[in-house]
Length: 166
Image (cartoon, rainbow, N blue to C red; front, side):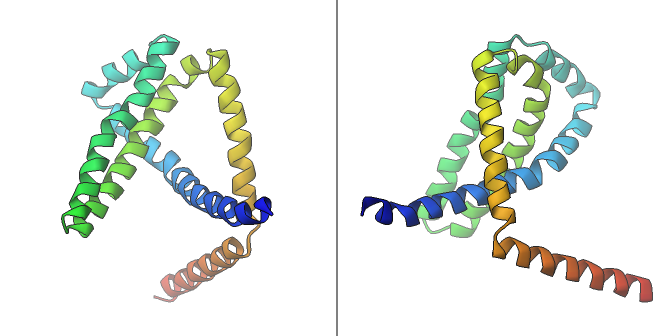
């Protein structure tokens, strides 16, 4: 009986996590490339080189630092919503999420070799990757995903035909 009651919540949690992970997957590589381009600027080049040379545990601290630094910004966004500025609060959360993903993606690319020398981190990362891939496979087999993908492809084809005929 308890399993029947918990099943819808497990499904809901899975859907919410899938949405978050899909956003991360969608944004991770393009945002990381954008941050890498910024990292080629002389001011940031030295900073990135220093981050690459960090020992494993210091690399771990640097990797988690952006998440901690964004926490007060997200709290401020919730406060804005609470005082009647929901649009501004939502904009702050979205901007913080995009910028946070960009920074974390770049820092992870820089610290990945050092982090993978930590046996416990390497194990957790491998487990996370397997779990995430399974969740994404579940999403991609869903009817909603297949329908959205079909619509996206039809729109792309229609746009291409429109561009060619113009």
